[in-house]
Image 1 (cartoon, one colour):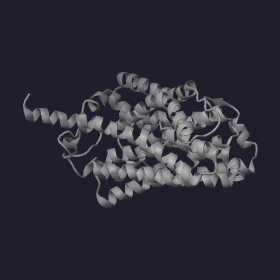
Image 2 (cartoon, one colour; image 1 turned 135 degrees about the vertical axis):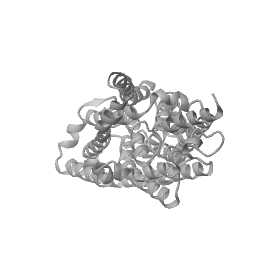
Image 3 (cartoon, one colour; image 1 turned 45 degrees about the horizontal axis):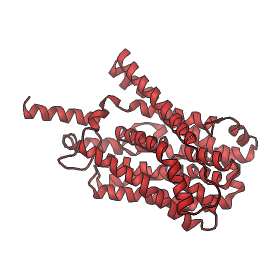
Image 4 (spheres, one colour; image 1 turned 60 degrees about the horizontal axis):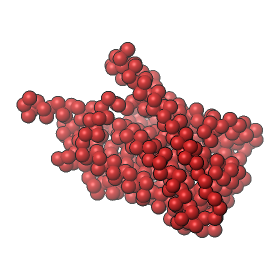
Length: 389
């Protein structure tokens, strides 16, 4: 095989499978990125218009879902208790259904057959190591610092925030990453890695941060089974279904039908699942939010600072390291997103459903959703403004 032919093959493979990374001789996509420097950024920056009405006005739909949820929770008192009746691994059944519906279409898009090619690049492992550092060292310590800075007199709320900071996202990050123009394959890899690390590290880190560093009183008995079950359900079910769907349908109906017909049919269901989850979440907690508004506001303040700060710190470091735009997006949203379903499940199982720890963990997604929607638009505006590629 000649050098020219080999170069052409690598460019084709990497264009279809590899994430974007910093420009270097180890860059797994440098060759593909140079074939048409204007095409990919243009496609990313026009994605909201290209995906239709639902995507273009996503912020409006999300805020409408939040408003309707809060109104239902406060003016129809039986809404909250009804939505909280059935529990599935510590999370209400309606919310669990929404999370699974939200994740499945995105995971069906991931090219699992090409992931081994991504992991063969040294640059990919640099990206993974950087992400592990940000997610498991920088982010938890930042949340711990902010919890103490904003809530020095509220140990229960502080504990709830620490649990939120330790839960690395395995669900909504796939939505934010896709909307902002991140790399789906790399995001799926990080989700899988964070899921494995979560099952191993969440419980001991929670004890370390709450008992050893914060010196909180009382017994902290966080069950490994609660953590493992939550991760296995909210990642394992949609991931397993997506892998089976992709393998079977591509073999039976063909790759073109799968890509052009099936994925187009699935596309809107991720955002429909997101809107449904937000509506149910705010409806089930709306009354509690209004009636404990002081505690909610006090918890919201450090959360807003956390989401914005960890996002832009990660973005800034990623740019300094020379990462390309899709990788910067994936790194930043992975760092800023949290596993609220795990934090809620652990807080409820450990401290009780009416505890302040459970309240703080519940406020997490109520703040995360609008803030990260804003960050989606912000990062796309910055990419357009400064020509990031």
